[in-house]
Length: 99
Image 1 (cartoon, rainbow, N blue to C red):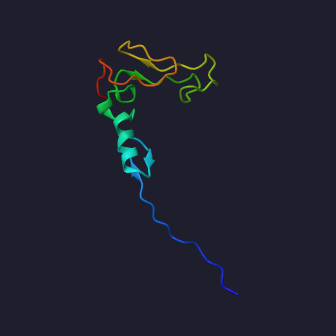
Image 2 (spheres, rainbow, N blue to C red):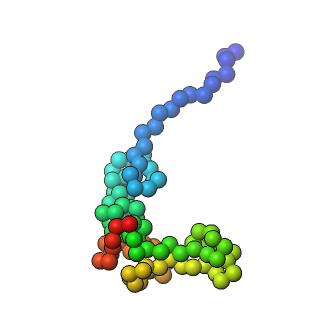
Image 3 (cartoon, rainbow, N blue to C red):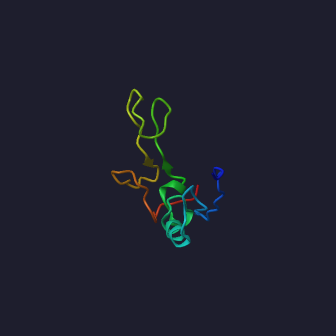
């Protein structure tokens, strides 16, 4: 009878975006993500703009929480750039200013 085997160490190479927490196993896929990452200042998105107000709630939770008495305070742009209905960040915004 053979002895039971124990845990085996496995080393994995991952490539991470320097702007957010995303990582991938393929370097090319990570490079493609960086080119469109909402947290990359080079993409001039709402997430890195000083004019962006992420919104919130009366209860103090994150945007989208419906526990507040007045309902959610939706994300908005203080530079009056219209945001998409699904609240995805605007990219390459002409009013962008780094936070």
